[in-house]
Image (cartoon, rainbow, N blue to C red):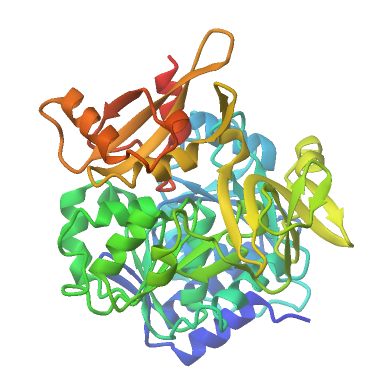
Length: 510
């Protein structure tokens, strides 16, 4: 029987009571204080009329009270639903309609007058009053969330249709945390983790759980600081970071600051990437900035509990690949490549990535139709159809080839938009690129458009386009060369720090 994650946190908190567990821009909370607050809130929650496994929605940004609420929910048998303050009202309403939470803990002001819910809303003032009355809480063995019971419900970004609530169990989460703190990554204890991904993004589990189960400190950066380059770049060198967890796009953004380098941040020794493709260009730039750091590329959808494969990206891997591999399967996971309903057994053949094993979530909350389409059983294990294209090489190393719905037909050729992007970024004149299709009224792709952040903004866009084309001669297949180039200073980003590719596609086809 696996040890309960809350029990593991309690043990770590006792051993590190005086250490800083959470630091939000100088506002600090020790492990002892964090455990006391979680116990106090759990004692109060246990007295409320909430049936076990009734979800609790937690609404906020990067405040330590988010973590307090998550822990207290788990201690009293409830899965938590993290929702970011900047969420759009239709998204909030969709989450409420789907999840039917029994309670809302509002660490930021919840828009109660603009949405419909029967849930009790606990305001920030009420929460703070509750936390002042310190109480001990010792949950009964069967009271805490455990085993196959739900630990959290995380709603997908919902870029098409309504967001889906992914049901992740205690043991799904436990196996992920054990992997992160195991020999594959060898992350040190008692260090500082960057806490930037919002808690509504499952990538956040890659920093806050490993940090709090290893006596480490979360250096949390709230959304308003991330949005303000001046604040962000000023704060960055003073955070004394050791472990970076984030998307490649966020690392690219940080590299706009000269301070993001080993010279000014010598303690930063680990980079953990997930959420979108880590490009060769980003990896090269990081290796130049931080020559002594370890860079790990990982892969996994929300439906398989954050990440299920990982590999260290060495200079040799960067030098020998146009697109970087996403790793070997974690223990307890089988990766396979399928063509339709048939597994492809020949190494190196492309198909859909199928994940089976102990990381696969229960399904989509109150959505049996979509659950049945994506989840199934394979050799007695839960399995998930990712919708991602990929190949497994002979050594079992996974190579991600982009979303299958980002594959298009152009003039008879199958074109992968991520492959076009990777080819474009071989140009020394391009900092970042995204390729998007242009459709005609019949829904057929007529040509490709390149959205480009150039190394230098052009005075003469036509001349730059000509120079880019010449620089890519022999490096990109002629049918993959975009016929239109759009130059930008930055890309639109999702709340999770990913490039909003679907937004770019939509803008190109208005």
